[in-house]
Image (cartoon, rainbow, N blue to C red; front, side):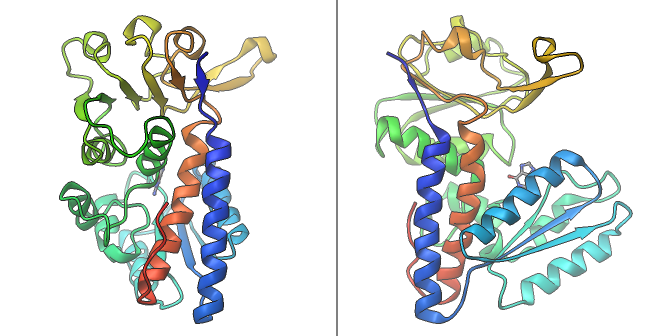
Length: 299
Ligand code: GUN
């Protein structure tokens, strides 16, 4: 029987642990964890993500602040806001929602966030700490941290002897995911658009993580029978069966044909998606504990 990995349940248990940790911090120090989320422009998908992040932060007992800036915001204004949030002692975590409007350069903005407040794990200091194995003081990007938690549910913490493949090499996901798998002793391959034969490489993987942004690209004949498949894609595709003009969300993995071949598989929606927000809350509470000089909880 294939295990369909329940990301909603895993996320709920992380959120419970975060809420308890936030309550304990407030009791001991009088301080709530503080999360600031910054969004620039009018992209509807980004607005939907940001409002669920702000809502979840409140639910966890955090101080939650949202800054909504107009499309025409200048680089200077945005960097000025980040500088203010860096200096604000009530803010432990800062997230600037990506992508930014085209006239803005995201890298200087992200790199100007203090590494200890970079709850997205995108600052070079945090990427470097992950690459050098410093889990004690760094912050790990939320989606890979969440995907890794799902991998741990199936395989435990030690992936010695297992082949893992990540398809996708972004800074936001593919590279940090590969680092996490490597840190857990897996033998890791990163595949991408210039790889020669992705299906052949994938067939060698005990753990296959797909983050390519192409609807249902991974087919059943890409899988090693019995593999664990983690689908990080969220693709909106037409769904005429639901009515004219309707859409549905599908992953990067063709779920219906892959599920019988895999031993464990994460669905879309309801797999990695809910984990991303949960791990953002986890990073914020970790940053808040460290800011108070306390040992941070682990998730
Ligand atoms: N846009 C899509 N995913 C993310 C994320 O994890 N962090 C940020 N900042 N923006 C995103």
